[in-house]
Image 1: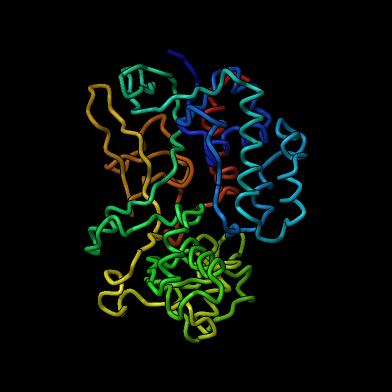
Image 2 (image 1 turned 45 degrees about the vertical axis):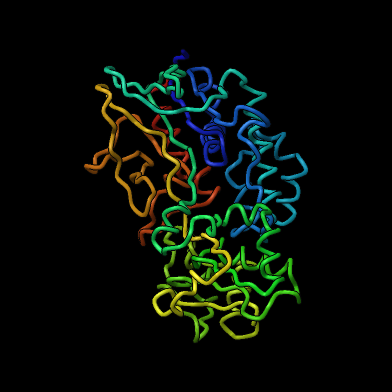
Length: 399
């Protein structure tokens, strides 16, 4: 068993933020020397697996993926690579997620090459609290992996299609996660539409409209009229600033929420890029292959009649079970299926108190903004969120 200062459970996009923020703050070498360890559940293939393998564009500008990385630091080589150059060339535009994913893969390769001892490839089944307050990661067969003073949960999220099927009385076999569709699982869906079938997409998020756009793009003129239905609770358009807002009369939009930090309207949930364009076309009636339905007033049976329902209603935390010193489960605070963290990314228990030494980072542990929206974005995970973690861990690390 390895002893460390801090173990990060996960090696995906958000987990990399700990190394990026430490490098930006000039303490990466010091933390690695004291024991900063990443646990990668992908035991085969490239470290961390293939990141962002989706056939769509990002919902943010390309520069968001680069902004947190110190150009003069340990990741300078990654910034000189082809993926980073493409991101830089399209700095103020949206970018294919495969390009952003390739850049994140380059960052992971730097960590793996710079500090191979800091990367442990094992599937963590649980974390257990010791009598001295440390956390120990354990495999499914009970083998201890790492004991550390701090632990960071960066395990991501998953789409709970089984829950959606139960809620709406749909056979589970007819519910497809949006992530699978966006990653290229299109053959059956496209085939059903070509045969005159219908696909219902549940949700009004970027993923929902990106999935619809991907299907319509693949089908072109072969897409049947009203073949794709988006069933949403509300819609929200993203705007760079309040003065740039357009308010289509037919749009059942959420409140115009202005980010206090950036001035961006509907920063964390507003539609942008291709998804936004498709939404506006559907609202104006110029895209008759797509129908929009407010879930409250949707035609009865629209989900049960569809050949396939695409789940695009958000993510639940892919959680690692936690146990206290006596072996009892540690209950955590949750909202909308995601584990709650405080303003400093510290995981909170069911009683609302901070769980000592435990942080959450990324999709399954995103902080909330003043409007209650989850702050989801690589620039956030690698920026302010990771800074909180590094600051806390570094405070006990000798200079």
